[in-house]
Image 1 (cartoon, one colour):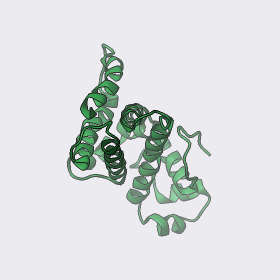
Image 2 (image 1 turned 120 degrees about the vertical axis):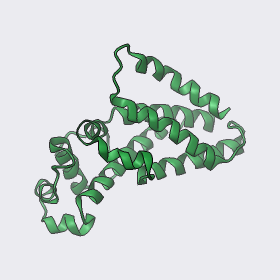
Image 3 (image 1 turned 180 degrees about the horizontal axis):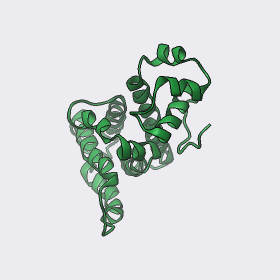
Length: 194
């Protein structure tokens, strides 16, 4: 079994095997046969569950990246206001996601995989983020720690802003500006929600 970057809430030998395969050879060279071999099951077992490599990779990304979101929110559960929990969790989640080994591997060898999620549609993970943001925003508005507005519209605005931060994870940064900008991420989110 591979060394995992994050602890998953759901152990799944097929997704674990897919993770190992993608980390070893990338998405384009990952096959259902390789995943089945790594998981110790038949190819038909993988095929019946996922249908094709694309569905398997989507499930893998959803599991891995959702765990980052869950961990970031849980780490700040004790903060006194919803606004603080949301802004700290979002800032930490963005930093964690942009450094996640699977995400970085996909950016390195299969960056075109992200293009549909940037310009055409939301993926399952983005829907989870939007739903989590909207729920927290509504709760914070009811609590009084977040300004009153349309929670879904604000959730979309936050996701769009943070998406750019994550996608730029591999951008050249010879002057170390990204690290300095990281310290501004939390105050930026705080300002948007006050």
